[in-house]
Picture (cartoon, rainbow, N blue to C red):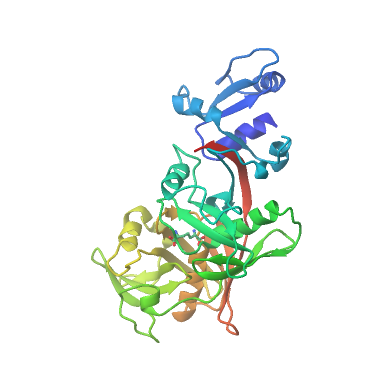
Length: 377
Ligand SMILES: N[C@@H](CCC[C@H](N)C(=O)O)C(=O)O
């Protein structure tokens, strides 16, 4: 369990893992670990163990982490008299970290208040991958409004508040089912900044989400690009630093600019792009008054696409659910793909379908717990 926990902490993105152990656990751990582990052994006492993964001596930041706690399974944290998800200490935030294809979020049980438990400034600190927990955003499960089961609010890692998050809402569905102690197939009505969204947990644990209708009218996306097809912007020229990109603009409640090519190459090789350089230029482009998420897409076949994303307020992420939905809508509008596609993202694939009968987009994909934790605020 102990070495497993250490490996887990390290895979969660840490340079060192700090574990609070019983003396028996410490001894077992030390005898199985590398010589670069250090611990102060005292009989019958809890031990603080620091695991060095680099050759550097642990810095003060590692030591501070001993005031926080984390665990990889609910049963471990539930062994306390108060179940983990029910703990309510002031100045301590209990959270569960989830990911959807590597797009990772800090989930907060906010069912007792309509005001998020932390501010956007605190969210920025918690999302920091070196000085905080590390995440692409913080998601709150709040009481439902307008007859819905729950409300979802989210802060991006830069503290801005988007209207919707596709991978996030799959994680939220799994989080709610855990809070409610439900098993098997479950469906929830969720109020979001993009309206009503309905995630449904499948028997196999995947989450299928009715993402609602895409918004295509240019001023509603919003984009200042001139509409060229039924008030929408399809395959329009967008100049970014002297390169002429072909852009299709789609909102899934939040804005997306989808590009498949440039004037020079009709089809992108997405692995060759320097996202860190071009992504911010799209995000802050004058043509996108609310900034934008941007998807760079390669077409393998009419049912198989590959994308990389630069997210508004979060940068390059491993996956974007609303982005994958926008990509399939844009591919259909540009005549590049059919209405049901597999979309490969750096963190794995999503299945997306844009149904003709009701104009709704459906997304199916995974959502997994990373760890349970508590941080002082
Ligand atoms: N990763 C998300 C989208 C999160 C919001 C986005 N950064 C925005 O500002 O619109 C997803 O999976 O949809």
